Image 1: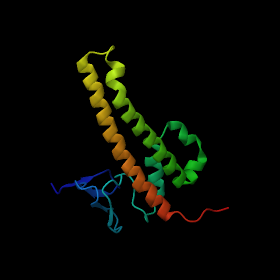
Image 2: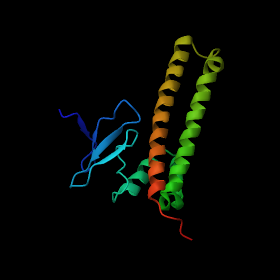
Image 3: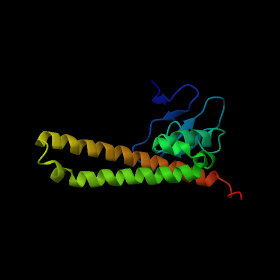
Length: 155
């Protein structure tokens, strides 16, 4: 096997993410699009900046990380930078809530759960915290790319 994972048909091929978060991965798109080096935290389903589908794929991916009712607000589809800001704030708040829950879980649950169940709850907080932190890093790089590609606001 070549060490590359195909995300889905018509989607980019991506080199496996390097262990060092400062390193970049390379995305190769079918149909002759140029290779681009992207941050290691770049989401596989989001096309790179400068490609025709960048904003569309970024919007779809960002909506996966906010409450479903955010889809009711057309302004978030029209202005992906606004959606990225809300996604960043939402996931940051979820991460902080998970950290707070982790800090207080043992005391809050000790009279209600047996010790093995408390350990499982603590492990759930750790796993979700890691997942949310990774998601936040990905949102940050997409947000920065959207800000760098968006033009001046129209009146």
